[in-house]
Length: 190
Image 1 (cartoon, rainbow, N blue to C red):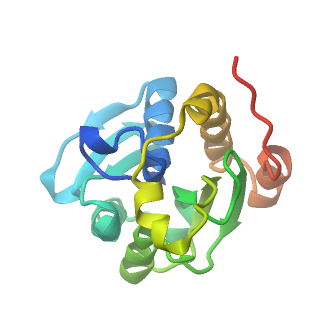
Image 2: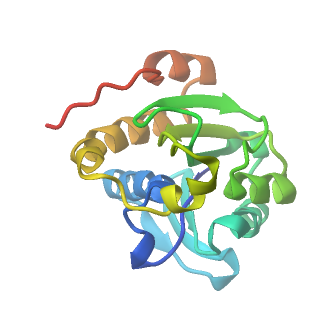
């Protein structure tokens, strides 16, 4: 069993914010795979299933994402190596897609929470959102909607990331990273 987690914050005010890119990728995966919803308040999130893959959007708010991940992981007895977390990354340019296993949180509160509850040795799909000019602007930046020019290319970027994330359930990390990694993004609107 695989668990694909998209990080974000619940509520309509956060739907199109940079911090919610993980939710947007999971939404696309649920749509593409035809996954069906599973209900249990004990999961602290929106959970969907298609064959041997679970898709999770924690509804605990970002800084408590680990509560939801731990609940689902423990209930379904999922090995940490089969957990994939899709998240925004300030250290990558907008539109980049990078992959890694384990590592630090880079200051990301959702990753900090997951690391504290289940450990850090899971797979990560890092979605570059760029960064503001000043560190003091980070909170406003990640909780702000994508700019109009970013919105124009968002569908292609999300499609690419969703496909890559599914590939991680079928192929080794190095092969997926080589084939789907995007270091210098040049997405163009369709």
